[in-house]
Image (tube, rainbow, N blue to C red):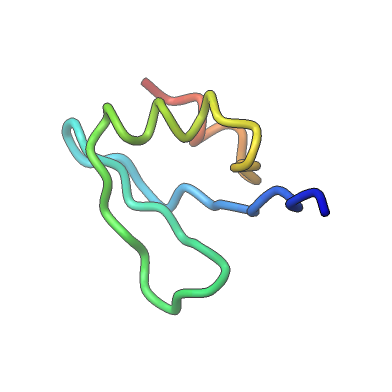
Length: 56
């Protein structure tokens, strides 16, 4: 059984960290830029708002 991509929304970028909204959580999660870029390169995560998601 193949996993479906997880839809992720970038809420905001703050310094070297990002606040992202995961579908199963009510509040945004803060991740550092290293984890954020790993998630961006992982096909399991599908980012919805490309303008913020591509912000470096």
